[in-house]
Length: 294
Image (cartoon, rainbow, N blue to C red):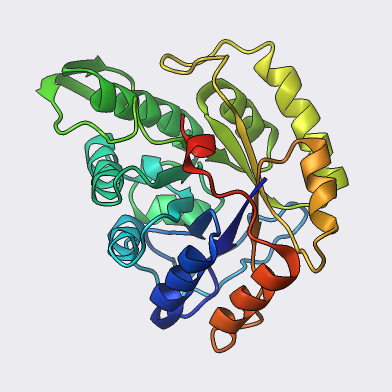
């Protein structure tokens, strides 16, 4: 089981130091959340059962692929992931180019977590109907997969319509970086099973993760897979977790979790030292890059 570090909730000034230390210690990934814009009027939450936004609208946000590309240049082996990127808020040409750039400058270390998003007013601010966000995401993913793998692409869908184009270069990871679907809803689980190379959950215990994994396994054996998704390829199960002892890792591995995302620090000031302590007390997992390929 691989262990990654969550960069969300840290001050951007420590992103580089935390990533460099996690890379040195052998952690598998760093993960960064993203939004396009925060409207003043915010409601809802990505956490099931909660209705209070987890961050204020004044939260600093950077372009996630620009930031991860910078961190790629400050690291050697650690993978760089989005948790999660609101792909369908952008035209797939823009999203595919940003993802391709990270994969290229990192020499194939990109992990692409995507989701439909929980903040409906963000979609409204961008001039898009939030009721269409799941369908837009499905169509945008289909376009991106073709851009990354086909010599020429022509597409005529509900949301995107264009004549033949070329998209070069192709990603380092073939046929493309891992597409990991985030979310806890039934729709998100179904999308992960149908169109993803893995699933990213919120914060779980082994017991709650097992329930989601059971649903995913049932869905993966029954849904019609999206074009470009192969049933026999490895499927990653990724979730956040609070880990204080090495023994707690065994429970997650036993139920089928392949990747854990941890936040071992209380704040930015202690982040680097907390990453060191976690590595010493709980380990860093198995960062073997071969195990993360699609």
